[in-house]
Image (cartoon, rainbow, N blue to C red):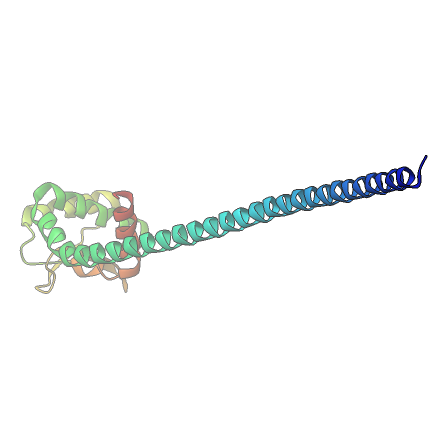
Length: 202
């Protein structure tokens, strides 16, 4: 083998070694690049999931806040509506009660309730019944008969021009006030009942 041939063989061997080393380096670089790319993609997916989760949480928080605000506004609106209706009811209630007093059947129930309340609260003695000037004498006589049958004593009747509707029954300093003014005196209790009625009709 000549020197030239040996030289060429040596150069070929060096070239093959170089190519092998280059290929190994390229393969390693590709593997590292693929691994880095896969890691970057995984990280990007994780960050995207976290970003979506954060955004969903923010959206849920915004929705919850909006719902709470809506509920607050609905409650405030309902409260204002009840207050307006309560004002209107207070304006109309005296007139409605006067109409009931001028209706024979409603007035009879009113007198009966006043008598029942007085029977429960007052001593069974001679009562004084104060009433307005327009209460029919026949109804006064019927109440007197009823009291006489229940307690053995007939009441005394006193006309009080200040009484627009209803009557006041008293004895010995104790009074059952079933007049219009007396029935409307406890604004808290009546207001509570009116609110209950208004809420029940919503």
